[in-house]
Image (cartoon, rainbow, N blue to C red; front, side, top):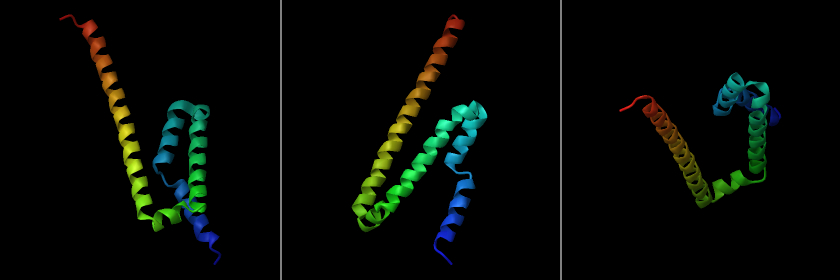
Length: 109
């Protein structure tokens, strides 16, 4: 059996499985329509293509042969996700404070 057949089967199954990207696209499409969702679809496709390209160029082999590179990439991911969480928390806190300020105008006291 040619080696591309298992890869093609995996690619088909992975593309229709509802992962985080597919759920994001579904949510965007339902709430914002096709035209406003198209940039998210293009961005997700370009990100997936870039990941395949990086692995094809040897990033996967580099990460398996050099444990410190894998560890550094893991910590970079921790920092990135922590920064995103911090921004999300501050944005949610600002919205709560805005709502409290708005309600305090309506309720004298």
